[in-house]
Image (cartoon, rainbow, N blue to C red; front, side, top):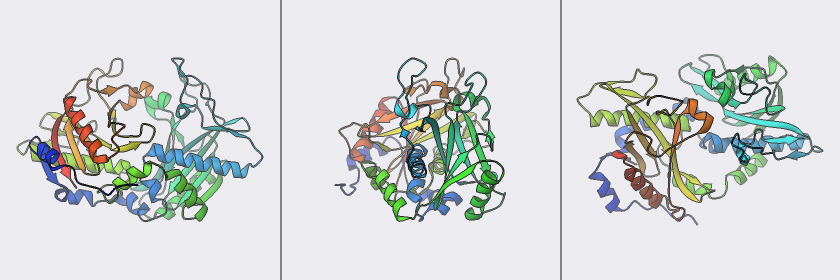
Amino acid sequence: MLQPRVPATMANVFERQLRCLVLSASQFQHILSDLGRTSKAYVGRSGHELFLLSSNRRGMILQEFCKKELAQLHPHSTIAEPTRGNRCNGAQRSASQAEYDFSVDGRKVECKSAQMSWQRKGQHWGVQFRGIKLPWPGFRDRAPFDDLYLTMFSPDSLHIIKHDLRTRVTSAGKSTGSSGHAICVRAAAAQECWQTARSQILNKFLAAGPCKLVAQLDLSAVEVRAILARQLEGMAALQDYEFQGVPLNQMAPQLRGVRIEEIAFEVDQILHPNCSFSRTFSKVDWVRDEVRVEVKHGMMRFNQGRNSWQCSFSNIKCASRGVRDCDLFDELWLAIYSPLGIHIFRHPGGQVRFSLTGLKEQDRGQEMHVLGSQKQLDVRGALDQMLKKVEKWGCQPLATILW
């Protein structure tokens, strides 16, 4: 049974107050209260549980919905798990690394999912499916799958579309070879009503080519809610429970990252009141005098496989042999988003605790993972372990924003 929250020990709180700036979340209410148009559309609706998930976790659940619908549409067909195959080093791929998701009567099926969201820069609703491994010179002569199904997630529905491998397909520049193509569809500019925008997006998929609407699922339907509840049950409920009512939890992960960056920017201004700041640079988050600052955030998540809490930072564009000659920043800040607050550190520089990401590293950068003990399921105890571990690696605590 989940136990009620208890505050972190006063000893640990007092110890960290001596070594870094401690601020109240109320000081950043102007940032925390801005949910954004996308979050407002999803909050309070049946699909809100899916909206709050990471894209990977949501993608796995939507893949199961797609597989279930195809099984109902083809009751006499044989649906099989993928053949894993081997990596380039000869090792067997994990189930999640298979080149396709499952097969139907021998035809390899790839499922991609994306949520409909408001694009602030373009002032429109849109949907983007990424990582589609279509043929690309020097990388693939053919796609590793036969059929592509897209699941579009909107505030109250799922739409499953069989794609024709051509409609609205775009390349992704140099990363196309390693990361795959994208499928991007936008609604009309300045169309703020998400229901109208969804109709426009579906029309662009279905009216312009041989793409087919396979299924439409109402997320409030009893049978859909039952399937979703089964998918979300288990120890993942521990994470959901701990973050209930925590600021920023009602936001999509991408917007949450933007808000944490905004908070970190104001923290830097507090720490350096006599410096000049600029946020006009595209390759870093801001510049303080001549110092380029990049912020990466990670949410504390419960890893069911490891039975422990962890926090991961990704897309770190640091120096890497054969990829980059130097870091794309002067200071790297790490922000741990937890049920107790936001904990901001400055990385010591160099390759401290970075891990390689294979071919993805060419475009997405490196990763950093902070793991709690497998024996420590209490989020407060795990957080204390992780904060001490990060400091042991040489990261300097800069600020803590307490909820």
